Image (cartoon, rainbow, N blue to C red; front, side, top):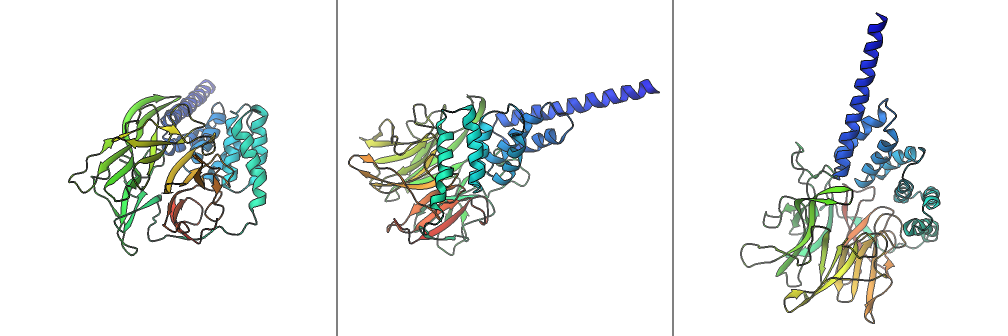
Length: 418
């Protein structure tokens, strides 16, 4: 009887060990494929299980999954546990610090950046974020830079962002086309793929644009030429590409088409490339200058802003906007208000946390030091996708700050101060 009992216990232990190992294997596979939303329950089972061998890795990767799916509160809970393990990757302290910045916990963030720098004392991002966290105290009592309100008629419980004017109405991006059976949802977030939506008037209900504008995967952000004869859009297409330590299953590029000439025929931007992302086009009023975001090799940081000029019907080879605009971090979502004023989002300049919105003027042949638009346009969360009216003191922007209707919401602003 005793031998039988021991055998049962051994088999139970081996079964639990195998189960935990299988959960970890499945979680890591999903994680390497950028399927963070789907990886969360697998990492959770490993962390909550009795097998300790994988708990350290599962804990910090679970925190990463929540960070990358824009859930900083849950991410902070798991990062807090992860940093108590020995020999976790140094980036765990860096990412925990930035999650704490998102939550406005700047003093706590300072401690994590100091820990990160103890491992990597020369790291630009650690030094910069440490200084940002220290300097933010001086911004707390500034007068509001604008008056804002949630554009509730546009927003849903999903992500809604990056509005642009079109045909007296608004085109914006949303992932509200959600598949209840999860057969055709985006593996990163668990929501639908991004699509273009159109609202004709202030009182109209937004509707999804036709399949001419939307395809099977992500569509948008988008911009239109000044006379609305041409559309430029970001599109994600399905492919399979080994990229660094992950398997990329989609690639992102810029596509354009002539409008009002029959069926839309989208053409690929000459400098799209499977090896990197090309996205977020902003085109000047005369249609001869395009600024876009890309993580192509040779940039200042992760994703930089580049420009290309239309010469004799062809786009010139992209050039980097330079070190005043681009940083060690990410620069996204450019908007050209006119030929000499650029608005964009970045997490590499002095800011509150996450993406902040900035403004730069083109003078004496170069872009000037960006100016942070300050609160309440900016917050400690992600603020991006701005649209300016002709007066340059009103418009709309996007944010995932608390208090909205969904993941990302579109906000109105007015009385923007310099």
